[in-house]
Length: 147
Image 1 (tube, helix red, strand yellow):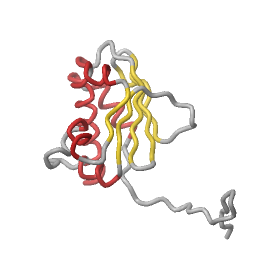
Image 2 (cartoon, rainbow, N blue to C red):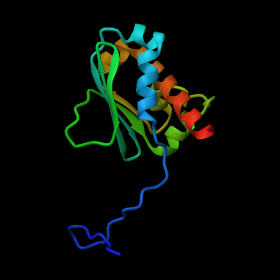
Image 3 (cartoon, helix red, strand yellow):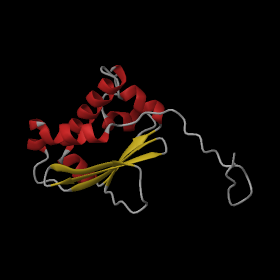
């Protein structure tokens, strides 16, 4: 067994903690079929970075549709909106009926260790679209974990 060594000679922890995983294909497909999202997101062009602990996700919205949604990074993905926080906060948010201030990314950014930032003008202009992303994400995650 080979034990990875970092640049400074120390061992590298290659084990990932069991965290929350977003079903990106399901979320993309549902958003692109959701009448409420399609109506509120029309004309929107945006790149969003989600992070769950150390795990990044990138979503590209072009003309109101999710063009691309991926887990992980090549290191060059652009983003103008940044949404995320620790996995523990995400887990409390991604339940069917979240407690107060875990129900919305904006509320969580004020009351918990959570970030909603970047191009706030776009965030506020398309706030209902962002709320719909959250709702669809929550539905997909709860279905994945209850199946």
